Image (cartoon, rainbow over all chains, first blue to last red):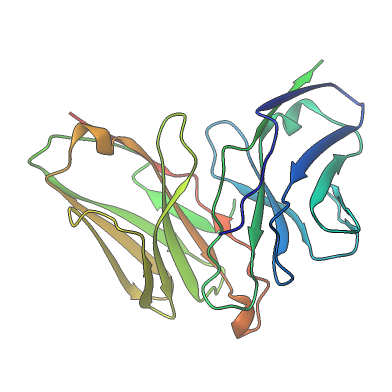
Amino acid sequence: DAKTTQPNSMESNEEEPVHLPCNHSTISGTDYIHWYRQLPSQGPEYVIHGLTSNVNNRMASLAIAEDRKSSTLILHRATLRDAAVYYCILGRIGGGSEKLVFGKGTKLTVNP
Amino acid sequence: ETGVTQTPRHLVMGMTNKKSLKCEQHLGHNAMYWYKQSAKKPLELMFVYSLEERVENNSVPSRFSPECPNSSHLFLHLHTLQPEDSALYLCASSHQAHLGGTGELFFGEGSRLTVL
């Protein structure tokens, strides 16, 4: 499975934008980039995913480098509720049972 | 409310006990998963069921026995566990992309297991 590299932790202030980086230099042409987050005492939840183009949804934006070897999850205005562990994962949609391999993720702390 | 419900939320058992974890999804999904999350370790995929057939078994010890009687229910039967099996067990479901869905995983809140 292609691996991703994320910083162990990041800090942000409330109402400021947050840019969470992810490196995936061994990504293959059929790998999608997925982001999930896990709030304290909860199961992970889907945030966003993309293949080549930048993606936006109500939760976040995903900026994908032109060579696809890195991506950035953007939270436009961090809130205290965004404090969580954020996982960047590569997975192949359409290849059968989707097997998403979670790494250690980035623990985001949001300061009031 | 995620649509994926796990019971019990907390379970304490001795090494000789037999217990089961239950997962139920009301999202019409066709795949269900068991993950294990130990302290300070990444989530580990244990089992995957697609259309009620087991399609993935990641070298999980036989003291963990999954069961998927229908597309809405998933069980994890536990017997003669070890203290190192203490962890958060997470169930997830998805509508797989090769069957017309998005592939997005929906997780339950987990069952916190402590083995004494």
